[in-house]
Amino acid sequence: MRLAAVVMVALLVGIVAFPGAPRADEPQRSARGATRQQPTRSSDPLVDPVSPAGQRATGVYLPGPYFRQLSVDAALALLERTHTDAVVIDLKDGSGRVTYETDIEILKPQVVNYLGDGAEVVRRFKERGVYTIARVTCFADPKLPERMPERSIKHFRRDEPWTSWGTGGTWLDPYNRENHAMIEQLTREAQVMGFDEVQLDYVRFPVDDGTQYARYPAEDGTPRPQLLIELLERIDRALTIPVGVDVFGLSAYRDGDPSGLGQDLEAWKGHVEVYSPMLYINSMRSWHLDVEDRSRFLVESGVARLRERLGPEPVIRPFLQSFARGAGPEGFNPLFIARQIQGAKRGGGDGFLMWHPGARYSMFRRAMQGPARSLSPFPISEETAAARRR
Image (tube, rainbow, N blue to C red; front, side, top):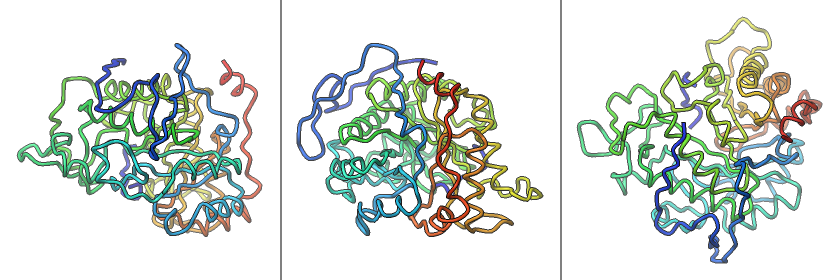
């Protein structure tokens, strides 16, 4: 999903009924059938503080197949060897797969139960002090639109789902509030499983070259940024755990939403506690080729600019590149990894997450046992701590 990323990096509540979706104050049934009481929140504010562990979390992305091929024990060993303490686990991935036994009827045909007992997986991580993050891919979905084309972005001439030239797959229509309800229910299930944080990916409109052929059947005139704020507020009201979002790395440099993604990051602050800009050197291949420690410079610049825009309150926890493609003149080596981590730290970030789509982290292990080992933990200034306590 991220290797194909291109260089493009207010309030309606509109609660739409979702078949079978409980209210926030009603009991939920877990994926294994046990009834659990959905946590309640106080009336205001809608801020769900990030724990001290979450504010300085460093970790890795683990796709669903990792847990079938390896195990939680293997993941814990990886964290120990890399001196990290957080995992990002797919619940719904960029291929449309749902990695656990969901109670959402329309998604059951997409279940590939890599996790088994998801709540037990989360429990095992948490008993070892690991910060757990549930990744939910929102509108990019190569599976559901084929079964339910009425929920999809469609080709402007043909009554069939439109296919993105960038992701190579179909997309759900962001204007369709039934899609919002489904995403909300996924995040509810993540909270019931015990995750510390939910991380939303593809919270955006497609912007690749093929969008001139796309039409949005449910379009109602709502501006794109306002529509996504509506989704985020809906999720924020449903949960009592922090909401995080993945955003194009280059969105850090652009005020507002100049590229049409719908991602107005400043406007999201009321409902988003954690921002994870995807600052992959691969997506900035032609930038600053004359800078000696280029990977450090690019990450530091992106994090610092986003911090300048958002202020001290939100957690900024960037995704960094742990794959070889597009590493540039520095090459893919432990120093390349270490420089990115140094950039995140110097730019004012709160920890970091490493991304490899197949969870192959041998180079990251080498970096954390060598040049990057002294770069953790990330400090939290008193000014930042005070701002987050308010």
